Image 1: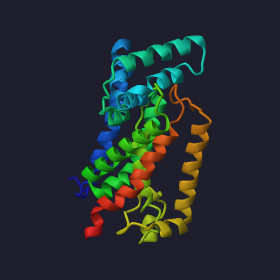
Image 2: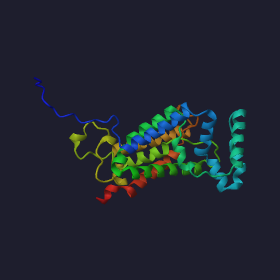
Image 3: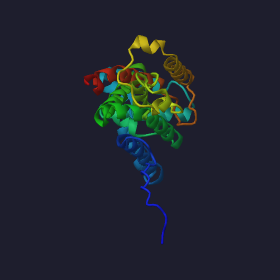
Image 4: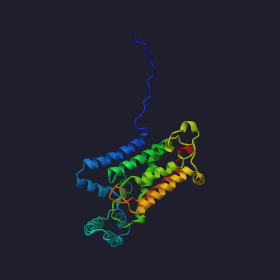
Length: 274
């Protein structure tokens, strides 16, 4: 006779405790990079990069056809002789094919320069995209990420309009979601006992967003913002690659995405209606 009590089955604990849309976003970024790194031939990968990466000079050449001379001078401005020849040839290719390819204002976020690059963006996306998706739902989460991506691209083109260096990476969109999460994740928890030991982005979302004056008085939030801004400016202006790709950090795209997410969340926040 079996005397073991009939205990209830323990609840299923997911491996990744993230909203489905965030898990899908991370999975898509990793999958695309895996296909590029492990499957696509080099020629196909270069073709993909040319058609999906953001190239500021391409958009500038379409909007201002008389800027061709500036684009060529920028391509030949620095580097070894081989690098100058390669950039000049690419600049001539862009000028010969003056299609703006406006989708690249968003599609560049799907590509990354290295495994380190895509994994680092995935970690930040999981950390700060999760509270935004839980608060706003998948569609508003996606809209904030897309708007931040496009805003980051626009700022990058405005600041470096003659560059022929392809811009890739989801960092601008991630920065926008990070800024959106900053509006509420650093508030003191309503139930300190329940939230003990949880990181800020793991806590239940507060009912309302913090105003800018309240955010400025919130020491953890301001410390986070200062460190984020200083890090981006330091490594971006110093042109330090950090081993993530051949290009330096696009601090201007990060900043554009961050500002877009920061001010867009209050307009899309679903909780303010309740």
